[in-house]
Image 1 (tube, rainbow, N blue to C red):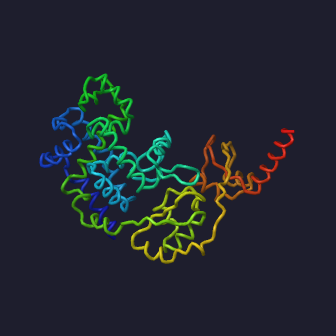
Image 2: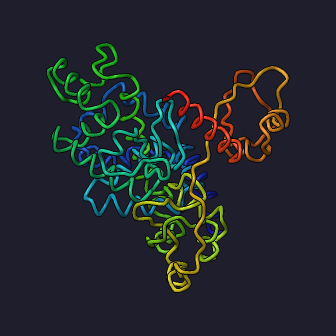
Length: 376
């Protein structure tokens, strides 16, 4: 019920509040100063025109983010605050991904903070066949704050750190050199195109959402039901054994498996990896009971062999049933691997097909035999 009230109030706030009215001018100036932007930028003609358009296009982003990821917002806020970053960096994450842990860009950037694999690894996030910590809200947010602080140290200003986060340090250094200035209005010049269009829009979106969220009528700041989520959605990090079923852990935590996976999206499969330290995140009100019931000697070890897969390109006349029959697997398996909900397939659509274990073992045996014959 609280969530329904929250969203209803949020929608009304966005529909009826004039968030760019003069009475909010002071808040907007403060946001600019916090991000090291000259207060004169508030009157930049391009920004004035763009922010009203961006408000129309992207205000719903805040509604959807609050609706679908409300329990993670206090986590992000807390880490951002503890790491001494401006609170406006929450809106960078919202612009990047809508706070969706499984968000994937066309360039294969993944997670709430949209890290590429190499960048994630450089920030000590684990990305391997078993775990992808880019989807770990807690660790990826800490990594993002550290990365943004390093960019701030490199460029000296928070707004430059935001630009570099999107377009890269090298491109921003080149842009500043070509412009002969690091002034934001100059760097955003549409005619000179010192930085890519995507980056110019990126920072304008962040500022627009920050202005929206700092409206005194806006639910992020004033709605007490939303503020209470910071108390009711605290999490505990608990170490768990290697090579055990996530479903077994969910049962011990007294959580629906889908909810357990929602809090722990960094696991690629439904089991913990056979190597390294392994942790799960649980709501604080479930963690103590879980720890008491967790008996590593009684938890069954599971097969952690990673299923082999191949790519199938859909042809005319194909259906999920015909493809499943061809490969001797279930339609459910194809749906699960490809996150398919409907029956419709498109010509030339690529499907990930899991290879049944017995088929894989047979192929592996055949390959071994062939290798021995050739080696002789």
